[in-house]
Length: 360
Image: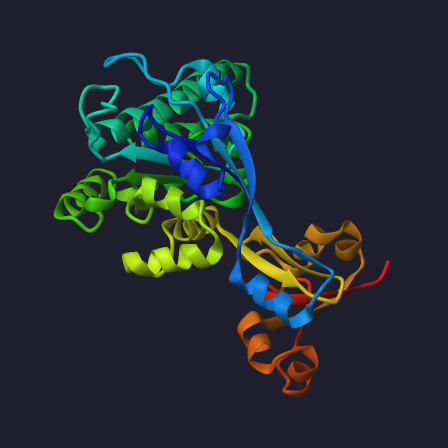
C-alpha cells in the first residue's frame, strides 16, 4: 500500500511521517524535488504471537509505503497544487491530508493564521478541480467521437455523472459504482476517487478539548463524506513515542493514559479505507502476513503468494487466528474440528490462517 502524506508547509506532515516511519529529523531531504519515501513494517501483534507459537526461521510482517510530499503554497489566492505536484502524487493509493490545528508563534502559519477549515477547503478544491479538468477535456473529445458515430454513450454518461458529483464539491470515492464503471474510471487516475484521511494535527494540550470537538463537528457538517475519515493526532507526541523502544513506548503511553498509539490507529484506518485485510501463512520456515483486498476469493489470495498456487488450486485449509491461538496449534485445531476446507470462491477473512493445497 502506498500512502501519500500531503499538507501545507508547517502543518506537521513531516513530523507525522517521522512518527509513522520511525525516521529522524536529521534524515530529512531539504530542498527535495520529490517526496521522501519509506517502507515500514506493519507491526501486527498477531504475527508476533504466531511467531512465538511456531519459532520460524523467518518472520515477515506486512509493509506499507509512506510518501511525504513537500508542502506547496504560493499565496492566498492561487492553487497550491501545480501540474508537477499533481503528477507526482498520481501513483499513491490514498491520501493523509495533515491539517494544522496547533498554535505556534515561532513557526507561524504560511497563510497568516491557523484556520483548519480553510486549509481543508483549499486542498479539496484543488483535488476536485484537477479531476474536473480531466473530465472536461475527455468530454470534449467524446462529443467529437459521438458526431462520428462512435459508441461512446456509456462513457459519456459515466463522466457526466462524475462531473455532477465534483461540481457538488463531493469526492468521486463517494459514488456507488459497479465493477465495470470502476474499472473504466481507473484509467483516468482521478485523485478524488482515492480514499482521503484528514489528520487534524493538534498540540498535546488540545487533545480532547472542546475546541477540537467543535472543529471535528464543523468538518463533518461541511464534508459529510469525511465522517469516518477524520483523525485527531498530536504529531509531536507521536514522533517522540516512535523514537522510544517498545517497553519505553508502552510506559510512556500508560503515563499519558493512552491505550494505543495514534500511529497504530492510523494504520488500521488506512487498511479500512483501502478495503484491505491480512491473512497469514505459518510454518517452521516462515510466518508471514499477506495484505489483500477485503473479500478476495481464496484462489486469488493463493495467487498473491505464487501464481502456481492459483493455477493448481485444490483447497484452502483455513482456521481463524483467534481459534488457533485458543487451541495452541494446527494439530489440536484439527482434533477439535476447527480446521476447515474451503473452495476457490471462499472470501478470505481478516485474520485467517491458511494453508493452500495445490497441484501443478
